[in-house]
Length: 196
Image (cartoon, rainbow, N blue to C red):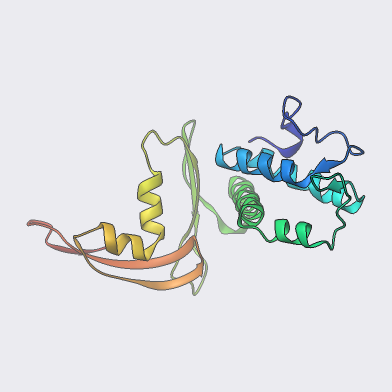
């Protein structure tokens, strides 16, 4: 797993190692968008950490070279932007995954090993009184899973894109990506009506 300190950003327009060089907010926003949309989320997160250090030293500027303080409207607008918040959320999910995986690998907190092979590792655990089984997996998927996972995670999308779906409901929901859903499907014989 790649760590934040291992990210090489020397060839990029903003030098995150230089803690004294002022950075224009517009340039920073542009680079953050580029990293995020290239799926270079660790780079995006490192850029946000750099921004937070510079804004604390009054080293963020506007296009005219004027210093933007931490409480300025431009800085607040950037910090409340979807891109900024999505980057923080993505990093939070990564940290949560790594914490769960580390805990599972060591057998802590009741994790049970299901697979432990070079291309796939899977662990699960039961929590007393909770109908949802927690699963952590680290594997290579050679299949375009993004559309499937996006549809499965979004109740509304599943209703729209799956004509065989008869009904769907949340049984229990802990967070956006940690929920138990019940879906009833109408399939042809011999499967007929099934619930997942």
